[in-house]
Length: 145
Image (cartoon, rainbow, N blue to C red; front, top):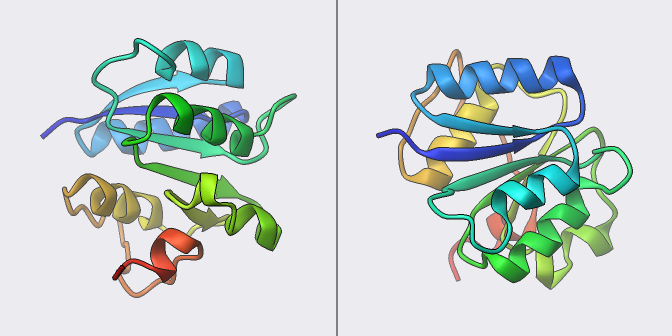
């Protein structure tokens, strides 16, 4: 089943690669290189969006801030934040970001597709994904309740 995914990624090469993988998995992808564009695509009034994937290091305004703002408009929307380093504890434990799955780059092949499938209820191991890779973040640490 095709799902609509917003990909907010500042690096053009990463955006192409991740976007290509998502499309290959059967999803429709809206791409944004900046937070203002991402908010236009996913903010108030946006319909049909199933997931957002945000680069923590978007230019000017971080992907973390994008996810905080989106939470106000779209509290039901699952999200993945791609970071190059583990965010500070106060960010990961921020209640406004408890719904975010954190993945640290570089990712193992297929890792993002595995997480996308898990969040959307459409398991997809992608190319070489491993269900044994750990996640970091409050949404996963408290998954049972």
